[in-house]
Length: 280
Image (cartoon, rainbow, N blue to C red):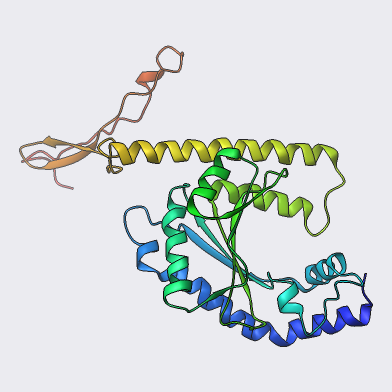
């Protein structure tokens, strides 16, 4: 571990650049939240976006963990050594959506030149099928026995800038795993063996859920006809000499084994005033 005074100087540098980091992070987040190709349509590619500046105490822990006599992290190289000082997380529903999100990010970097990459985009997964998918798009893939799954881009506003933003792109299922794991294992890993085993199981459950969602959208892509919009409750019209009164249709209950259950429900009784009825 490096000298504490060096670490404190690096933390002071972080405080000094926090304002600029926040501005850059904000522009990255806004780009995803307002991009017309990513946020429009019946099922937008981007479901939601989150962002954060790194917690100062967590940054101290990370510096202390990564630094040594051969790897000093100080105020001059903090932004090069620690590249998640700011972060934007982009959430989407299913795997195939990543292809277009990835294409738009690369267009932003390669064609428009608005961002520069600190390193090649990386994909992290434990799943061999996901590995093939990521490699097919062009990611550098890192297998994670922890069952962590996400795609990372680290971008800067220009070459040599100390400002950096880590963009994480993942599905909503993968976000569930990430939030639980973060709560238990960050910045210090839990000592509970049971929790560690349960996190691994959760990763497999999340993987199964992601596969199911992928399958649903592949089915829809092949035959979109079954995907009907949710209809408003139908109304049955009861016509009377004096009025036409809407009455909700009572749908048959699903069979649940209890005799008479299908007869349950509320029936709306409507009293219609007679043409020459009593006053009131």
